[in-house]
Image (cartoon, rainbow, N blue to C red):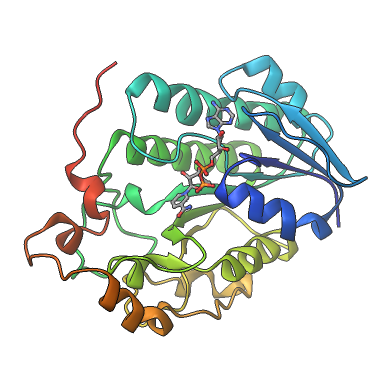
Length: 265
Ligand SMILES: NC(=O)c1ccc[n+]([C@@H]2O[C@H](COP(=O)([O-])OP(=O)(O)OC[C@H]3O[C@@H](n4cnc5c(N)ncnc54)[C@H](O)[C@@H]3O)[C@@H](O)[C@H]2O)c1
């Protein structure tokens, strides 16, 4: 059991799931976000913090022996917004982890690191990045940072390229990319239970019939996703029209992110 687990982005979609379902991993859970949060249990501590503030992030990480890093901009935006949260912010987090001796991190990366691969391609952890947005580039930066801090300073990170982690798949692309909340929770549990983690790239995806990504290189984690988006296939097909064969959502792994404009400051 961890002494103190830090969950960043605790006010967000996945942060709320982590807060509800992962508190058993640690004696104390420190929740942080740029928005205000209130402790709801004795073991919870809440600290409001902008990841762009290096000194505040250093104080945040003090005393934590594990981090679930979910905080940051989670869609495409102006470079200034992406840079503050996802580039400066993730650097501040790893520097704080190095200085304060925190040795294991679950890093929420994204499928948008490889979003410009086409949907007929099958990828594993050796695939060269092909980011589709500034957001995807920022996640690629975070992955590189995690690897540098692993090889130089021994910090272990699960680099998790999350597909689409929502209660259920709501469009046809998600029949391939969906990760259920149960599978997300069990992945975080495995990341903090495995004796030696290293710094693997993991595709955050359920056991979907239509998935594009191969996780066989991380069998050693003991993570066995149990859900399958195929259960929702009829519902998704009934509720979403079939896109044209050359529509971005039918061509690219990153879907519509592949045609996002560059947002101007
Ligand atoms: N949910 C998914 O399907 C999915 C897919 C791919 C990647 N991810 C990644 O997983 C993480 C969590 O995703 P989510 O869906 O919960 O996103 P979300 O947008 O709901 O939550 C992100 C949280 O980060 C906080 N945040 C934003 N900027 C911040 C800053 N400068 N300082 C501190 N906190 C800040 C927000 O207030 C928000 O509560 C994100 O890093 C996202 O990029 C999620």
